[in-house]
Length: 198
Image (cartoon, rainbow, N blue to C red):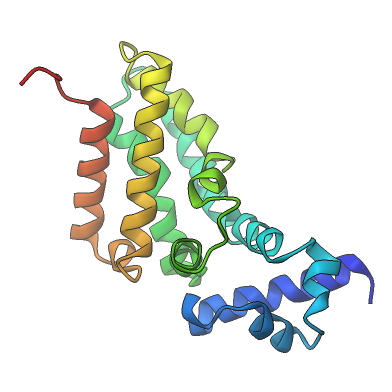
């Protein structure tokens, strides 16, 4: 079997396990058994478990990033950008894609938090998410008085918050509109920041 064919087979199996059985069932042995290949195939095809998980991350979040791009393009046409609208354009696609396709995004986030390898860290993966750059660009327009380094720190905290809320809620944050609204409000507040004086 060629390397690319093996990669596809392993990714299909890994995605199927996440969607059908959840993060708790994910292991190299489970993935290779479902793909009908030996355990060493993960190393041959990806270089190891971490690279498999990273490739899975990119695959599962691809439709999320497509929806984000669509929403960001609409927002970019406006002069007045409410921070909450920018946050919603970044976070809500996770809920839309999860609801419409059962993408396994929430299970993937849980996998990264609960049984993930130390490298790359979940935040490192999210920091390389293609949806992050336009998110930061729009936030820069929505928060013109916040210096870029401060905004970058707030974005990292916001990503961690979103990531943890989804991963540790068994995905209910994505399926429950009231919880999703609370998450959007919380993240928006953090990005806006508060006066540091007591």
